[in-house]
Length: 159
Image (tube, rainbow, N blue to C red; front, side):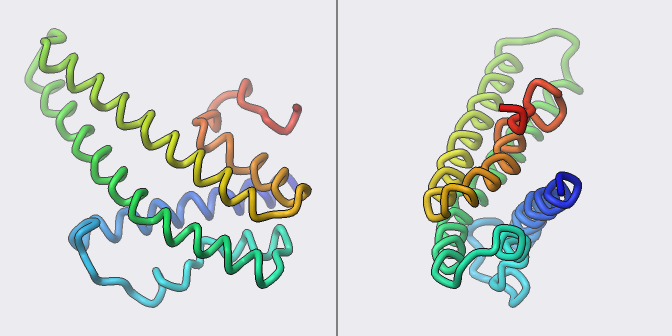
């Protein structure tokens, strides 16, 4: 069960990342182009199946997900710009200059903002689910939102 849930979570995260990347590549958040695959929200299929959502629950989850997409896109764009700025400064410097330090802080601030927005979205989504569904959803998603996916200390399942 844990392996299946992990696979589904990875699929959701990959789906959101792919959506972000495809939109950014096609003109970013300002693009009005959306393809059928993006509008069908395949990244949510696992949620519907794994948590056995009702039609009403799934409709609300889709609505929340669609509303969160523009915020996610903007965060992806800003993170990408911050990464590029740091890479340029890292290649050009062998010391931490004030400009380099400011770029590192900006990068960290954007990540905190993104993480807070994602957590808000996850909690709103969990709020549309039954308690047992919300618990499983948050157990699966919080380690990724909190960036605990690479450490044992982030094991929310043990709590």
